[in-house]
Amino acid sequence: MSKTLSDKTSSLSIEAMKPELVSAIENMLQVLNMNQVPSPDSCTALKALFQHYMDALARRLEAETVQECDIQIEFTDVPGEDVKSNDIIADLLQDPDVVEALCMLGLRKIAKTEELPLSEDQNAVLMSKGYVASLKIISDNENTFYFALTSKGWLCFQRSFIVQQLRKRLGYTAILLPEWLAVPQLRWNSIAYKRAIALRDYYISTARARDFLVFSFPENTQLLFGCSADKGSELEYTCAVIGHNTFTHDEQKTLLKVIGAKDVAKVTLICTNEMDGRHVLANLKLSFALKGKVDLIMMEEKYE
Image 1 (tube, rainbow, N blue to C red):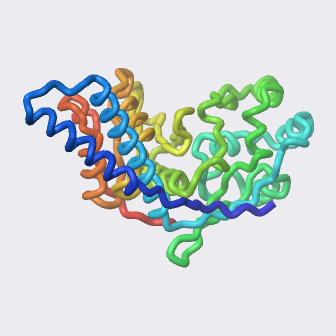
Image 2 (cartoon, rainbow, N blue to C red):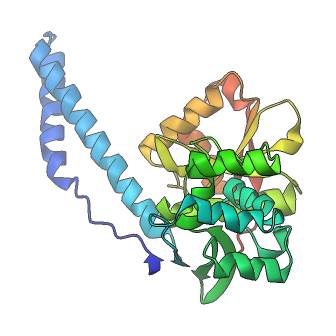
Image 3 (cartoon, rainbow, N blue to C red):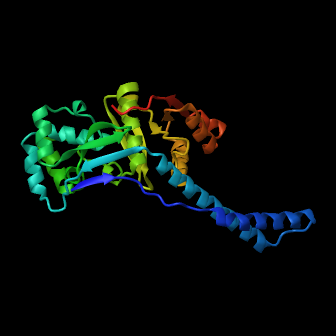
């Protein structure tokens, strides 16, 4: 089944709320100018109306963020619901080297052919058996290709019996991906794919990290973070800024939690436009202490 992923957004109008909100604010100011105390009900109503307006505004910004994404993704998935676990185990035991490659894809989510520790013949076998597939990114009339796990490939990490047998027979200790890491890229939108590409480019080209992973938290599977094992004992995350409206309201809350976490030493924001990065930092409204935990790194936007 061939799947072309695209984002469709509907217009989220907030104009209808403005007159009511303005009227409520004017009534409140009139009461205050008369040196009177507003009633609790009027305060509660104004607060609720204002929050409703801000939520609608956040949804509009989220829709605009999706509309800013100028790429298309084409990926032919191979379903795995009817695949027997023993068949997968038998395939992988024929060539243990492919298990390492599948682990790498599970951690990075996307990778170029040359990043996988396999020969051309081994890559071809993985594709022919449906564990990986080509991921095509279409941007500005240019096509860029990556490898990614299919639904069948993700079963290697999602079925406990397969994991147990592979670890038992091959001695792999890293084959078991935690649930928060085993989130298929098939659930991403276009913005998430752009974030994954930016994170990969950063770790491969800028940080030159050999071992890194890309992940998300359960509450926001489209907000991706990167982490390198080469950093030693300190926990440092990386997050990609895609445009000045890159984060939804909920994603911004998650990012703030990550920056404020005691066990996180640093969060690096990578972006292709300094103004976008500064805009995101301003919206986060970080305290002086938290600002010291955030770095801003400029990168060239490319798909290669």
